[in-house]
Amino acid sequence: MMNNSHSSATTLLDFSAWATEKQARIESVLNSTLPAANATPQKLHSAMRYSALEGGKRVRALLCYAASELCSTEVKVADTAACAVELIHAYSLVHDDMPCMDDDDLRRGKPSCHKQFDDATALLVGDALQSLAFEVLSQSNLCAETHHQISMLNILAKASGSTGMAGGQAIDLASVGKMLSQSDLEQMHQLKTGALIQAAVLLGGINGDKEKSAAISTYAKNIGLAFQVIDDILDVEADSSTLGKTAGKDADSNKPTYVSILGLADAKQHAQYLYNNAIEALIPFGESALRLRELAGFITQRRF
Ligand code: GRG
Image (cartoon, rainbow, N blue to C red; front, side):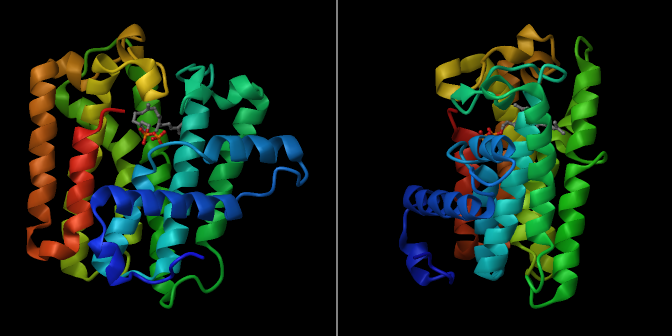
């Protein structure tokens, strides 16, 4: 049975044990939220489960849970928010892998959705995962305060749409073969990757006061960008089997990245700078921001 309170026991766990517990938790929430594979239409539901379950680091869910612990957000709200964000993320990966976008055959160590099923199914999987995210977040009586729930819907919609992730993806597709300035690259990634990471933190921290909301927003902005800088570095330094997706793709597709613009050494230094900013934003909260701090370390030191 899942624990339904932010028990003090979880603060006694080391980071790895805490993350493992939360990864299992989000897997279970996603498993019970996604329609059964044998529910009609079976192919679509099987493909949704194939794409959203048993995969990924669940970084966005972990950020959501960590922010919920700092801001004492109700556990049910944190579960739902983490689930909604992971559903949006899974949809973005399915669409991103399609031939009309990044055209990748490998995702999370297995064939991409359109390879395992077909293009039409992959398109519908993305659509349906996105709708499901908003369905769970709009369920009746999720939050004690209705305005919190409306804010959460607004945050997730903005982060996903044309002035967030979808917009960043559009800029990304239009940038292939171009040299971007660092600030244009930063803006693209802020939208494509950063916006959803920021949303994960803000949703988990929905119960926070003004001071906490402002601080976690600064933290999230910096860590969202750091995540992308590291992604660009790993694309150069790691291999496909470690990453579970095709390595070296950015250079092969002639995409501007932090590495192509800054060089490897400066890209690493930039990731460190963003990490430092994120950590600094948490200073006022001491031990209660432990998990957010540890996650910043995990994101910037990750090898996959
Ligand atoms: C199709 C609207 C639309 C958007 C796609 C997120 C995205 C935008 C594309 C993914 C392409 C990509 C590899 C971006 C780099 C950063 C990123 C989001 C990596 C994947 O996220 P991880 O590493 O994946 O958290 P896991 O599998 O661990 O969940």
